[in-house]
Length: 284
Image 1 (tube, rainbow, N blue to C red):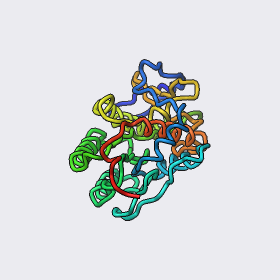
Image 2: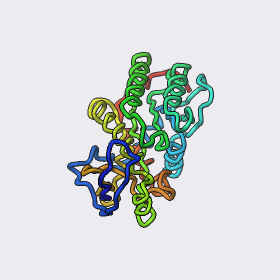
Image 3: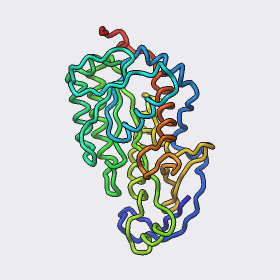
Image 4: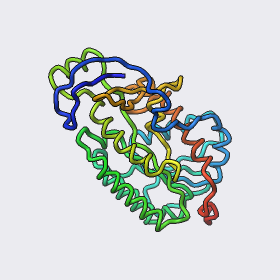
């Protein structure tokens, strides 16, 4: 756990060094990740479902992981550009929604596609923000309220679709000599302030939807090591999660290991969702 002392609400203040990393006890973890142990069975169930996924680059990483799953029954992955496109059973349809660093555009585009015709074609829909949508100064509460209002409207207009909520992905936190020098000079340390904002948003997601509506905790998966311990750092005595370095080669995007881990968990999660009236939709 990296101890970043003297880290006030305004993130531009001097960050003093002191690096000690440890796992956050599981009891303190925000949410346990889905155990990816039924991938084959999950792929079989998904052969009878239509899923729509709005995302950007990390979502692309996850889809690459789905493509690489060792099972011939993996869902067909098809990019949707026309809201009226036909989506057959067994399809994981997706679209690159909005613009990075402008999360509101992602919400608007996701909403536009579903209202424009995609909702008539699918059983399940989900969207995720990207780590780059969050800075140290992001108003997480305001962004969450926009997300909550958008999803509430979609659910009201499309009651036959199961909407899945996804926590925002994390990044690693810079460590070592470079981080120490940045702290001494009062410069931002990569991942520290941004992950604080991401965790503020994710905490609202868990508080609002956890145990009430489907919630795929991507951040929990990214911050959990293979042995189950949590990757965290400390700011003013509070632990915040960070991406496990083993799951990424650049500190933000998922590498092959991270892709396989998240893809397997997502397939298991989607397959475990109860059937909805949307499964009776007509179509090829």
